Image (cartoon, rainbow, N blue to C red; front, side, top):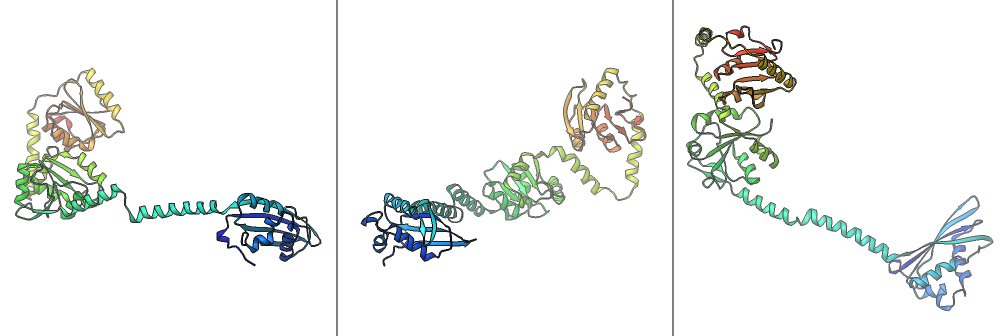
Length: 409
């Protein structure tokens, strides 16, 4: 008997059978052939269709439970959809199987080609995704990969000391100075070609010459290690800006976004120049204690020669108190001119550096305690009033700057 291969079928008839009794699988198949014989004419006789290969093997799966049999009938066909529908409908004419009453219900006619198309579509998506992700990068990725490769190949050796550098040192107006070769590579990878490494704490003549000729930005790691290089550079050449990597990170490991953010936040070297100078002076001072002691004893004598403190008008005192109340909990500071106009607001952590670089500060109101170090800085900057929450200075009245606390206001 010829049989059609299931893979060549176009449609599949799915039917459900319920039998009031216990029967075997051959009984069901016999009933299908026997009770549909002659029903549809010679052209749709099931036995003849199976011999010619136009229907495949009829599958019957049954299960008997509590004296009743339930099951499924599956018939694959290569007929057209009309003939397949007729074959399916003919199964529902079966009313008995052996001595038992039976009921057959066609659940669906499945178009095998639709199922294959769904499979083809899903599989094609998987293959395309795999091809895109693992084999073929898109044009943007290809361009970026090629550009990055070119940039990485662009590292050169610059100057007599053959320092690691990008290819655009000579033609760039601004130069970025980093610590080592790995830092240069990372910045090259992100598109910065005007970068050069000092390669250690010993500053070479090449770096000195570049600092004197170009705008120099020193880009340091986010730890204390870069301070040595910065101090050495400050003694040897001109520095215009200072940028730092995020806290705890090195320039060689930060991302493109972090690099751009750090360079946008670079600080003019003038803002920290006085602080570095103080550290350098401390290094060359004699280690004995007598000289610093003499300096500290001279200042009170000089202060006593200063004029008496200015009496503060009530309007100005009320204005100071209002500003101080506004700053509570902010860790900020207001810098004022002689007319009590706010020149700017800065964090208290940057107060010392800011005051050292401004000439027109008349008063400082800040959320913090007045200490000796801050008082010395504001005195040297000729600030007339220093207003804080409390004072840690034992005798603030001897200072040239008027010290006021919240309780006094």
